[in-house]
Image (cartoon, rainbow, N blue to C red; front, side, top):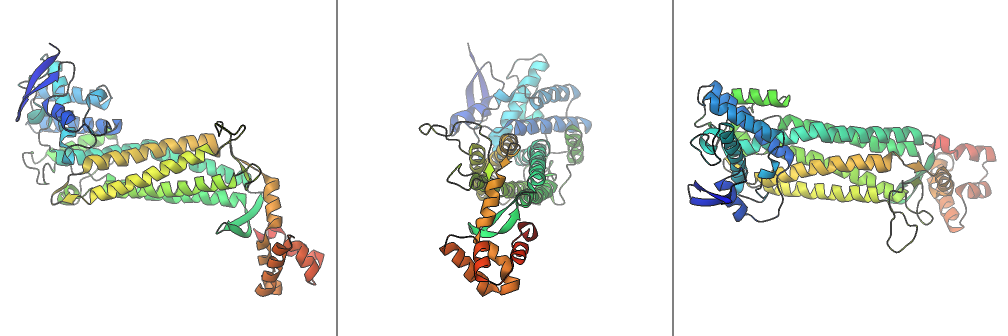
Amino acid sequence: MDERISKDTLGEVYIPRSVYYDAQTTRATHNFPISGLRLPRAFIKAQGIIKASAAVANTEVGNLPEHISGAIVTAAEEVINGKWDDQFVVDVYQAGAGTSQNMNANEVIANRAIEILGGQKGDFTLVHPNDHVNMAQSTNDTIHVAINISAVEMIKKELLPSLQRLHYALKQKARQFDPIIKSGRTHLQDAVPIRLGQEFGGYAAALVTAEKSIRHALLELYVIGIGGNAVGTGINAHPEYADRTLREIVLRTDLPFKKPRDRFAFMQNTLGAIQASHAVKELAIHLLKISSDLRLLGSGPRTGLGELILPAVQPGSSIMPGKVNPVMAEMMYMVCAQVIGNDATITAATMGAQLEINVMMPVIAYNLLHSIQILTNAMEVFRAKCIEGLQANAERCQYYVEQSTALATSLNPVIGYEKAAKIAKTAYQENKTVREIVARDTELTISEINELLNPERLV
């Protein structure tokens, strides 16, 4: 009594009465018990947007009765709003191109539309998943378009705002730390002095570069080949269907999606996903570098560099009392490593394009949206729980400047490189400062030495 019998082209399938998906989705859940991973909310929302837009367009061109279209649109809007997320149950690792994912949406929307019309789930004489919900569509264009729509929405509404807030926090720290002069380091060895604010200004500027790359990738994501259908020809679609569906998608998203210059190129290649993934990876590389630097500069508190004091957010050891670790920087590094790995997966999957389509689209979608989501969340907590509470240990910074043998670099114009190098080596060997050796072994006056080795002059 808790099950109903449904049919597809392969035969009968038993389905729980409570669910809204149907035979093809059920087969997919049996065929692909792989990971338990599902495509995320943003992707399901994009599928709802596509199905609602297609229904409107098909009605406008006279191919779909208004009462069926109205029910489909209402059901699709419920999908858009997240009401039926628990009904999207197909594993990420599924049938090529995402046929099961597309049918999952078609079946859920069809069965809900049937209810709206007063029928019972499974009565496809009222609303059919293929003939009505999927009218003029194919997995091959709708899944591809859903990737672009969901990626754009997540980048615009989540990733970029989070990135901009982190950029602002780093700029604020650059201003706050500008008076503090510290020893620079190259190859992890002493280098000439630098302002701590200049160091943080470099971090902030790197994020600006990453943002430009992401915004450039958006231009390719805005290109959607809806109406391409199976191979790009638009078979079984009204000549006006593509333009009308595109118009409806633009209205529903308030985003500037547009037709491709060549719809066949769109069908054959996931260009937007490739560029977006690479751009997000670029951001991850910058964030990985920043988080690594903070771990080094905050190392200690007594046996490390100790130039920065990172906020203590939780105990750092289960055995060493009082230990506090740079957990936010560590978290960021791990997230960035995952994003880089996701990009490698996307790269391999995009190489799977053959002839008219790429059949690896579900794993491309999952990894791209996963990267966007975890990097967005990581930047939020990294900013709030690490960057904004950072403090500088000005005394430690000043001490390292005075101890650095690289101060001898400022003597080059006066005594030459070779003599300056000898002073640096002598200072290191005798465990003295460059200032002390210059005063002892050269004829420079104290006034000249103070001028040459003045940290303010060197930065």
